[in-house]
Amino acid sequence: MELSKKKIGNESKKNEKLDELQAKLKKKLGEIKGGIEKTVSDIKDDVKTTRERDPAARSDLEVFLLYSGVHALMAYRVAHKLHEKKKYLPARAISQAARFFTGIEIHPGAKIGKGLMIDHGMGVVIGETTEIGDNCTLYQGVTLGGTGKDVGKRHPTLGNNVMVGAGAKVLGPFKIGDNTKIAANAVVLEEIPDNCTAVGIPAKIVRKEGMRVDDLDQIHIPDPVAQELARLEARLGELSEQLETLKTETPKKK
Image (cartoon, rainbow, N blue to C red):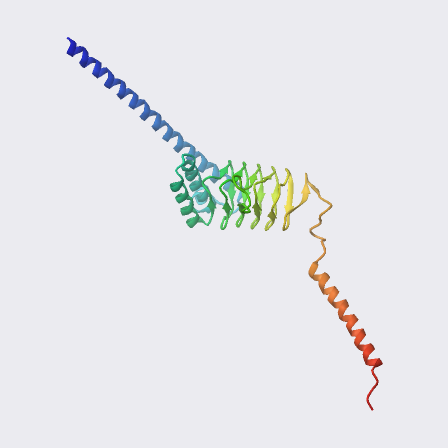
């Protein structure tokens, strides 16, 4: 009788462990399924975003197979998941492989919102502590980097609906406001408010809330080369006058 009770007790414990194992497995499979569904949804969103904003895109299949910006974002999302789980080496390996194949380097630690479009993309660099809001656009050659002077948060934060033009550099741990545009080849070294357009090296705000900023006119700004040529021309005229004077004053030899 006692042996029978003991046997029943052992079987009950075994069943409890089996149920617990099945519950863990079911939970894990649910997490994997959810992760796959989220990844598929993100890929669809990336393809849709590029298709809507790039007039050269002819089909979703073309964007999915041939657009390097979409490929870089796909790799980033996998690498970012690994980075969040503190699996830094495989995360970095994926990001570097994506850099090799696409020419776009996105650190796995960066935080990127929905609807990012990387157009063409060659030479784009996104640093570790960069944060990018929703519906932003980056063109080729853009750097979201640091200056080497900061620790911790070293890279910029982009708000929503920010456009950064080709070759522009945004360097430092400051914010670029919502709906702001950074012109091609601009170098941004300080915070830009919402609804602005910034151009130049270093970048200055030329439009704010749709109105031109009067203290900077990039079109009619004096040309330093032309000014220097004018000074040289004036100096040449002075020297010519002095030479003529010397010729007049110097007595002719008999």
